[in-house]
Image 1 (cartoon, helix red, strand yellow):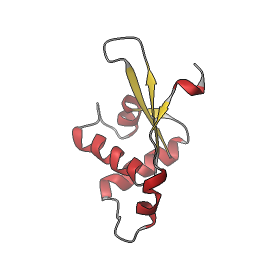
Image 2 (spheres, helix red, strand yellow):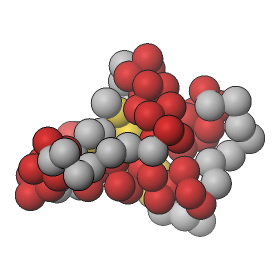
Image 3 (tube, rainbow, N blue to C red):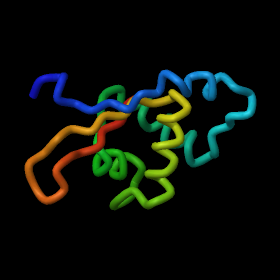
Image 4 (cartoon, rainbow, N blue to C red):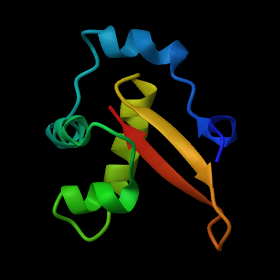
Length: 93
């Protein structure tokens, strides 16, 4: 699959949020950040859940991933798949 087929989240406008003293990741967000840092490469939600010793990410974990991406602290991409869902989310730090 060519790189151009990936959909990556644009965080260029929210980089200032990451540098802002007002933005403070929650303790859970810090655990997710550290886990992504240790992984060192793109990881999907299932693999991330496994690394966090969970069966699946819960709604709050997914919201935190979005907040971390909006703050410019992680990269997010959506890869098209053929199947019932049609795509896969991947994250990296």
